[in-house]
Length: 285
Ligand SMILES: Nc1ncnc2c1ncn2[C@@H]1O[C@H](COP(=O)(O)OP(=O)(O)OP(=O)(O)O)[C@@H](O)[C@H]1O
Image (cartoon, rainbow, N blue to C red; front, side, top):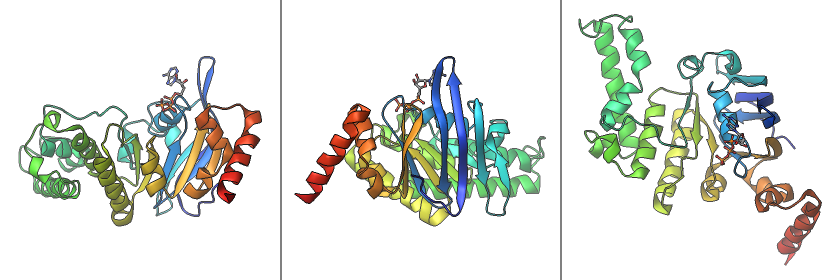
């Protein structure tokens, strides 16, 4: 089963990632829609973070092709790009499972650092900033406005001058997303954004991600274990188990897919039919 995507922001074709004797990602192909929230789910160790690391250039895949498709028709082969070019040129941004902020910097400073690339270009990679070049000043003003915009959307304006490390966990997660959004990504990859959030915070996260998809024309690719988040906001779900894709469809299709239930429950293949039967019985009772 493969979910049909008319207008992909990302296509992954026959991706393999091998670590010594372990095939962590096994012939994986899928697409993520340009304005969709696509979730990558699966039991622990299924290969989800490895896929993210291949997409964002942390790992060079053993085999396969990963393409970012921009609206103008430009295509970027991510597996061939230097990792620092992936956010800058291909416009693919990411957050991490373990929060990686500059703890000693303020919220605002974290958002300005996120725009370092744009400001360096505006300074012509010289001391343009110090000498007050007009192009640099304009870029700096725009960077500040963008930082303020994302502080507002994430409810962090009142925290602008606080050190990132002083923020509670839920706000640090939001700050990471705000910082990624300051790079104006076309695809935002989020590694377990709901981890450690309480139910109210994860509800706020859902709203923020739906806002990003609707207002910013940004596709989202998300790894998540919190099924309230996954089932609540995803347009499309891909399920991995032992590095292989075992399902690909809408939340409704995935929810009722016996092989997915089996993978999560950890039952053997031959028991899948039994699980399927139980689901059918459950649905008819
Ligand atoms: N750098 C590495 N070297 C060797 N093995 C690795 C490396 N990175 C990941 N693996 C292995 O690849 C497999 C997939 O790991 P991965 O972290 O991608 O899974 P995951 O689905 O993200 O798991 P989780 O939900 O627990 O984060 C695991 O068996 C893991 O031990």
